[in-house]
Every structure is written in C-alpha cells, then in structure tokens.
Image (tube, rainbow, N blue to C red):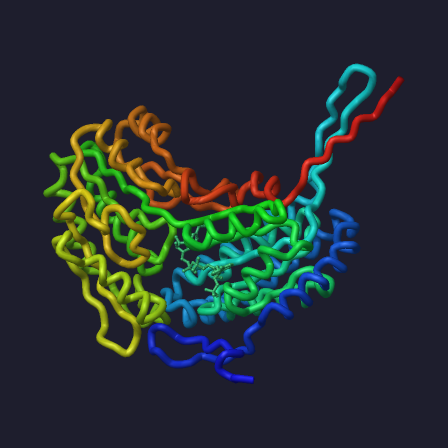
Length: 457
Ligand code: TAP
C-alpha cells in the first residue's frame, strides 16, 4: 500500500509546515460508515425529542467550553485570524443551541377535509451525507449537522481534505456529549472517492453539499440517479452597492471586511463593489486608505485582520485574475514567505468582460465598478450566474428595500456587510445553490413531509 496515497497531509498555510498526517478514508470506509449510520437511524429516530434536544444542547455547551482550542486549531489549519475563528466557533455553539430547541417543535398541521381530517408529520429522512469545503470548516459542518440530527437523521460528514481537523474534534465532542455511536461520523478522505460514494450510495437519503458550483453540478447529476434529496450551497459573485447618499465613511470602513474577510475565500465575499459615479472618487479614496492599513500576517495575533490563502495552487489561481483586463488602483501589504500570502488588492476592470468582474475569485481582490442610478446598479449586480449575497448602502430606506427586492440574491444586508445569522435563512438564488441553511427553514431540508388522512365517517 502506498502510504502517501492513503494519508492526508494537513498543512498550516501561514508557515507551510505539516500540522499532522491522517489516514485517508476511501470507498470501503464510506460504505461501512453508511451501514453504521443506517443501523443507528433505527434507534436515533425513536429517541424522544426531549432527549435529542438535551444531547444537542450538551454539544453546544461543550463547543463553547472548548472554544479556544477549537479556534486555535481552525486558525492554524485554515490560516484565518484567531479573532475570526473565535467568532465562528461561537456561532457553532449557537447553532447547536438553536437547533436543540427544534426537536420538540417539529410539529405538523391538522387539516380538516370532507369526511375526515388530515394530519401532517415532518419525518426524518434517514442517513444524511454532508460534504463541506475548506474555508469555514467547523461552522459550515455545524449548519448541516445540527438541524439534521435535531430532525432525527443520522449523519456521515466528509470534510475537505485540506481542513478536516475541527470536524474530527466535533465528532469527539458529540460522542462525549452522549450522542450514540454511529449517529454522527466524520470521514476524512478525497471528494473523488468518499464524496462520490456518499452521493451515489442507495442508503444515503440526502446530500447536503457546500462547495464550488462546478462540483455542485456534478453532485446534482449523480444524485438524480437515486432521486436523492440535495441541498447545494455554492459559489457567489456578490455586489456591494454604494449609493452617493450613503454614509461613505461607514461603507468604506465595512468594505474591506466584506471582500477580504477570510482572505476573500468566502462564498459571500462582496467582490464587486458598485459605486455611484458621483461618489466614486470619495469612496475610492477612503476605501484605498483602509485597505492599505489592513493588518495582514500571523493568524494567531489577535490584531490580525487577514491571513494567508489556503494553498500555493490557490494563490496562483487568484493571482491569474490580475491580468491585462484589470488595473490595480490600491494594494495593501502581506508578509514574504513562507506561507501562501497575497496582499489585499483593489482593481478596476479594463473591459466589461474582465474575468475579475464575471468569475468568482475566492481571494483578496476587489473589483470596483461605477454605475449611474438605481436601475443600472440593479442591472450590473444581477448580471451574473450567481445569486448568493450582497449589500446596499444608502440613507434612503425606500430605495434600500426597492433595490433589495430587485436583486436576484438570497442573503442581503442594508448598511451592513453581514447577513449570516443562526436564526435566519441563508442560501442562494440561481447557480449559488438550492435550499437554505440556518434559521427555522433549514429543518424543512432535513425532513420529509408526510400526510395522513383519517376518515371520521
Ligand atoms: P469544492 O472543490 O467544490 O469542494 C467542496 C467539497 O466537495 C470538498 O469536501 C471536496 O473534497 C468535495 N468534493 C470534491 N469533488 C467531489 C465530488 N466529485 N463528489 C463529491 N464531493 C466532492 O469547493 P472548495 O474549493 O472546498 O470550496 C470553495 C467553493 O465553495 C467556492 O466556490 C465557494 O464559493 C463555495 N462555498 C460556498 C458556501 C456557501 S454556504 N454557499 C460556503 C463556503 C464555500 P476534497 O476537496 O476533500 O477532495
């Protein structure tokens, strides 16, 4: 057996040092995990709602108690600033606490009909396969694991090979919190083996996938062979729309976080900044100064605002967007190697078809574009295959709502760069996905609706 092919080398992207090596799971491991999950479903679905709630609550408390070590691990493995990692781990604890409140509230409806009454139930689906990306490993895992378990399903989670460490910790925490064996398993292995097997496996009832639109399309096709339920949280090319009547200082202060957060490796990154032409010079001056002042460096330093990119290959891909079709108008700083560093960069396009305008960059490059009036802003913002996120900056409340309604995106914010919260639905229009994570609606994507007619004579 080739030891390299059968192991995963986990790297710290800020130092390029190996953190650890793990055995890589393959197709047989996936089959065994699904069989265990199927057996566990027979009992887990009958655990009382109250007991399921208690265990989920305990998982949330344990995550909170171990927040510092989990955040340090996440920060080291992804290269994200420790302050961001702590915030994300806090959200993970809150996600388990939120869905701990749902097993006892998963009620159906009573619908009187001629001759009787209909009763609806939200039934668990069975074995859920979750496939997650490397950018927010623990947070995104929790968005699937917590509602899926709350609804009575069992889960096999395949984290990204690049960043599997915190998901493995979550499995340990869940077992220690009293989750029965087999109810939640983590399998670190390649997407081409473990991921594909979960998608095609006849005993997996549902796939919750978060990742690229390209892989999402493939999963959609493969899952259709067994009519599997699929939720897809995919890529984005979101717009940050700044009207001339906005508080420009506030908009320019928030813009770096909106596009350079997680080094731009964020599906929600507002990577197209649309600025009303009359405010362009003022906004660009303020924004450029803020970009230049960004602290890029050691992820473990509490003052750090941006860390490295995830791999050298990814850095090359990001750098390829700085081509002849773009002009650099502002640039921050970044350390020299080792580490996969890339300075936060602001560009303007030299042509409307520039790749920096049309494609998801997934790195710290912001593309600034002018617009004239509301209609053009909406038209540019919607001119993309994606529809995940976006922001609107204006002091005119009616305009804010008008534009928000016209944008083809699932998760928007007004006068803020943040719209992802545990209690509210999150997901995309168009090629940004199918279904919603978080909030009360996520449970609908982990349950089957059953209707029972009772004749009353
Ligand atoms: P992908 O390359 O799509 O990988 C995501 C996951 O899918 C990984 O675990 C990967 O496994 C697995 N995978 C790869 N090929 C597969 C296949 N054929 N069948 C089944 N699973 C397979 O994405 P990424 O590079 O990790 O993440 C970046 C992308 O995710 C961006 O486009 C970003 O916008 C998107 N994203 C979206 C969201 C939401 S919520 N909309 C959130 C975060 C990220 P391995 O890589 O381990 O082999």
